[in-house]
Image (cartoon, rainbow, N blue to C red; front, side):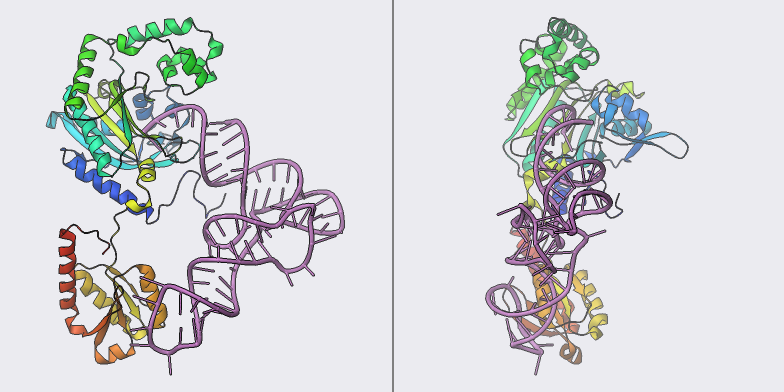
Length: 433
RNA sequence: GCGAAUGUAGCUCAGCAGGUUAGAGCACCAGAUUGUGGAUCUGGGGGCCGAGGGUUCAAAUCCCUCCAUUCGCCCCA
């Protein structure tokens, strides 16, 4: 244990990595906002029971991956491992149903799962979630999928595959489960992995999703859910696919796609990417029509998805941030200029320019080097000479040219500077010019 | 929870048939150039060699334990 060390699976995110996260968040606000989704900021701590009942007591998440502890009065609290349960709780607790027929929320922030960290998997990780409550039309499914793909392309991502499946509903799933169980009973249990042998008695659907070669081989001839879905579910799913087709969205039917949380039904989906290691799934979600009622809320349908920000960041890469180049950097040659630098910087910022001030005295050469490293476009030089003349030297770091202007006209200079910057931005140039 | 690899300077790593004061590149600081930056040259600061124990005259190097990181399995976003 070292006090100066992050907890395992928790990370500090500095620039330029943090710029990539800002970029993802801004894109999310833009795209989801354009679809009528409003931001919901949720607590990261909930009563443990919410997740046990929401996610399912037999899921891996609840069985062994939650950060759970007792508060000072002995109540069991859990750091949220996913967002949907919290959204449903907030929706119900605040009576959203009586205010509007359909509620659309997005929420983003850290989630916590006690897993072994590896590439693209942290114990504190970050998700962007969208939830649409109150709509069960297939077009709602199609729209949220289109919105997800639009978000991902807004991040500049390509080469992603949308995998989709239907899990059926409370009507048809029991019949399918029975057929699957019958098939599995005819199998030599030795052909299944240890976990799947347990799943036989608890959640046999998940065996289809197992990644073990032996299990995949053994279940090759298993009955497919598609053949058992009731007419309502089949029609619903066909409509979803047809709508996606009409809107030109590509998808891949994956009959074995089973999600790891118990509340999913009907449409389920996952977006996978090649090239970010073993943790290839960047987004996933589905419909959860019974969940709100099961948690004690109104009987409303819902559909939603989550995107893993760490994994999206891996795909976006370091270059994806949108950090702006600083306009100025203040260089003091002797300490007497600090008062002036402080107020001069405030004037520049008041005109919309951005930059840092270095109040420590030092040689010009060293200060210019710091300005270069800072990336600023202009170095504002305040030395003994300038103070005596009540002027400031402004050096253009790209061209090497410099001017000396009276301090009294600094605001005018800043105004002109800010205007040309805005024009450049309107022309759509990259902010780094 | 399981498997494998790796821990040496701020960063990337070399050094390991045990043998003096532990090295390089990059980065940083200073000077050459008294107040003009990205180049060059010269110099400089910086290390409980992950931690603890053991073997030995002698351990960064060999053995054991622990800790941490990473990549997989699993799980999922």
